Length: 106
Image (cartoon, rainbow, N blue to C red):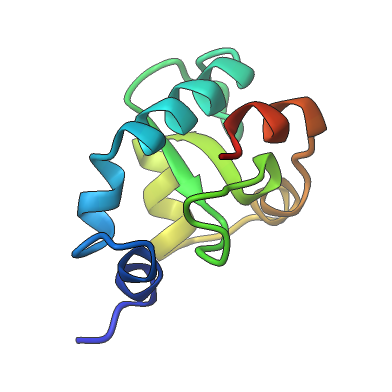
């Protein structure tokens, strides 16, 4: 089965997307995203079971803050599998912090 996230990770030299998610670079990026979000889900405000969602895989390895969203597991599943709400779509479009981008870029 074709997976675009795997293709993007392979372009960076990883065997798959899961390997990229275990990289030191991703651990640093993930920590920064969660910290920027106050260790809370950017959709519902929950502090539990946080994950980082890639809104696009185009910049894997050099993610920008507006490529990523700190979300709890439940909201992450809703992003991928629905249902969507208008505020979900707004959040997916609106996160920007140039200083954060500068801290995580190679």
